[in-house]
Image (cartoon, rainbow, N blue to C red):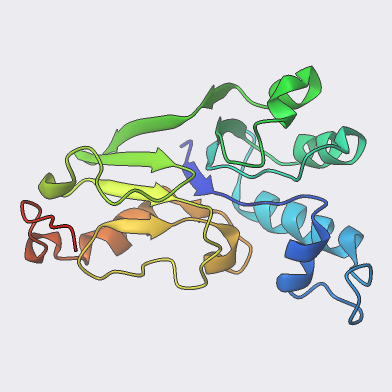
Length: 193
């Protein structure tokens, strides 16, 4: 059976992020083992994802440029890849070789899973479609090691940082979100300070 996965913030060829993720060989920003970083991303990804699986990447595939490095790495990643555009992707989308890596490219997307709506964006939203009916908001951008920061909201950072550099399978997200009692948040009382 084909599976669905989510991730964000791959940051291919991004020295600062690779350093932040533990691939530093020294104190200088240039002392980063990008080959080891890229190999870890590919190995972790392909250990979970088959060619028939679908993967939603919620933005920031790489820093701008260096398509000669980025394209071969993304081509090694299994599965059908759908891009939800992040802030670092916008300039890259002007390049055919980058756009052609993805079966679909969206700024925002929704899907249903087990009768629950999943809303996707690179950036976290405070309010999203059917939030007060228990829908999920999944996002990237914030590089959180704690993917669920508010135990009253069904909102989750699906970035690599919160899952030991592995993509998230949909059932993992679903089970985590069902543990959250979103009814305790008053969705009608937004007040400005």
